[in-house]
Image (cartoon, rainbow, N blue to C red; front, top):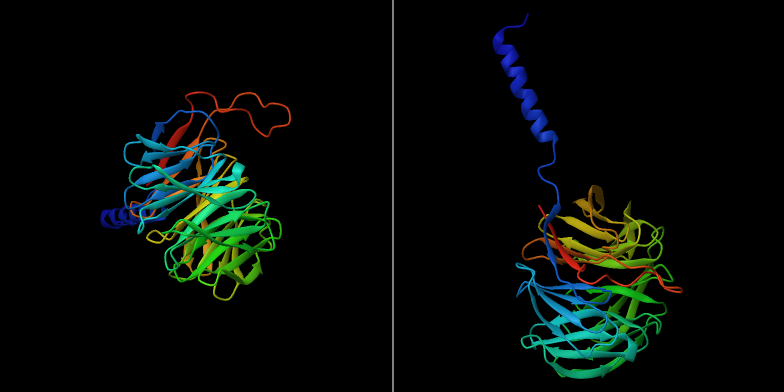
Length: 336
């Protein structure tokens, strides 16, 4: 029988080994806020300076306090709401209004409507590029991007993209990127000249929709409907890694502090991918969410991930989903 001191040392080492073998913490839903209201939804866009969320809801954009889940107000006059862009320097916000092929400009403080700018068919996602002080819409059916002066609120031009754009992002260096869902590509736009400068394939990642950027390492994350995420080096225009994610992805985010990328999937999962190095990644975990929680917003200031969900009624003939049941639309906060 080994000496008592040896047994004590063995038990201590086993305890330490067990401690380090376990993940330090897991992402989980920490708060659920019932927002209610009618209508389906689309993109969730955080305003990190003010810890607000802009949530598109068909005929309006809801503005919600991140910390309390309180509805702060709504942006009206939107017909087919999809995306929101925030230009803090000018105090202007922009929301796509797809049904009338326009963009609504509003005051970020009062949420009052300031104007309406013509866009193109199926104006969907929209992003703000700070270096050029311009807003770029991604018009799905028109296969184009509408470029808007964020300060003046005026149309600059429409850029043909050569494919159907979904979500995009500004790299903060004068370049804007967008996923082309029908050609399985990423397209690069030079913001100042408003021209397409490059494009590359996301294969084997098919139907890329969601996008997030790691600007420190020049990496671009595309979430694809084929159940895969692709990591591109956006300086060389090459895919450097792919990993499996959930089905029905529509949202993505990247937290530079934790080096975790997030993909929200309609199948009721949030796939968390950790960056071990610029070209090395592994799936950290899959967080259970309500089925249909396909969109997300990530606030880099407090590292919280936000998704929304609802319960649906019977599916009408010819429709993909039923109407949102009254009082069921909710905001979920995910953190660790």
